[in-house]
Image 1 (cartoon, one colour):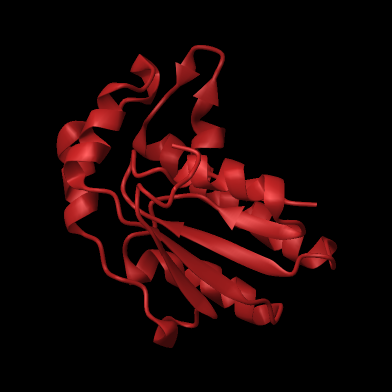
Image 2: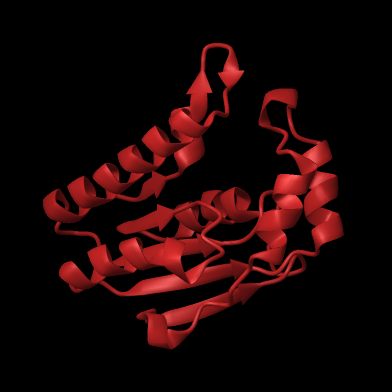
Length: 160
């Protein structure tokens, strides 16, 4: 059984995806609750993949492909470009003695902006916000607690 955790799933409404500060905070709380639930109740989970990259970098596409070939994994699909954002997830993984693999999507800013423009209207991210996320990138390190770090370029992201 694979699990796909993404805050965007909780921002989806009947009217489309709705962004708000309060809604985003609640979405993250629900993601952490999901992570804790699946870690404590699913003993078959063998790995957590933690996706790192700006909006439009290909994270969700990578997850969709990987979920077809991997089993018993949790895919935490969010921007997570800062060490401080990754820390709570790594702490959960350590509590359950599970390896956590960082998956860094190394997509250019121009490509992220282009993909963002091609999204459905309700999923388009503010250009300045996307640029800020891209600029805030802190490369994951093994010292953070990752078992491995994968760097995925657009050429290697086979489903694109």
